[in-house]
Amino acid sequence: MTTKLDKVLYTAEAHTIGGRDGAGKSSDGAIDVKLSSPGSGKPGTNPEQLFAVGYAACFIGAMKAVGPKISVKVPDDVAIDSSVSLGPINEGKAYGIAVKLAITLPGLDDAQKKLLVETAHQVCPYSNATRGNIDVELSIV
Image 1 (cartoon, rainbow, N blue to C red):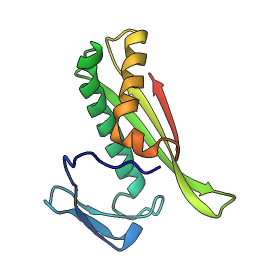
Image 2 (image 1 turned 120 degrees about the horizontal axis):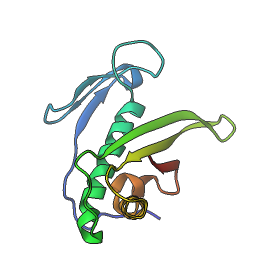
Image 3 (image 1 turned 45 degrees about the horizontal axis):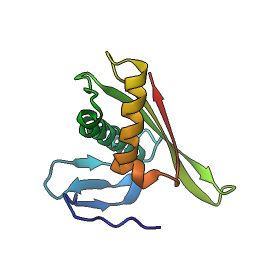
Image 4 (image 1 turned 90 degrees about the vertical axis):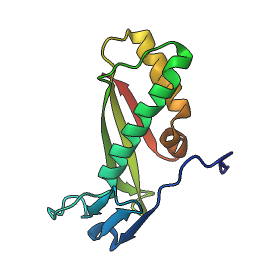
């Protein structure tokens, strides 16, 4: 089932050339990156690194959005260590990714942490985009 947006709040636009060994630039110039394949040793970043940063930032935003609604203040020093793994799926016929988010919420008790993470995972756009499609592991550290 495809999820349709009720309303467009923001649209990111970028132009990319050359694939994994190319470059990408956002329409506003805020991002201008050289791309390289994972493990190639060439200068640049790769899509998995960009996804790791994007998912973590989005998830923190989701926690900040839901925190007031569930009476949990998100700590100022909230942090996420994210990893995005790339590998073969379907007996090597295709490639897929898996995500791990290790979430640090200093000063909250275990119940608050669990409630905040579970609630954010239901509203985070990246969580909703990946749910049922890839393995996403959330851990509270």
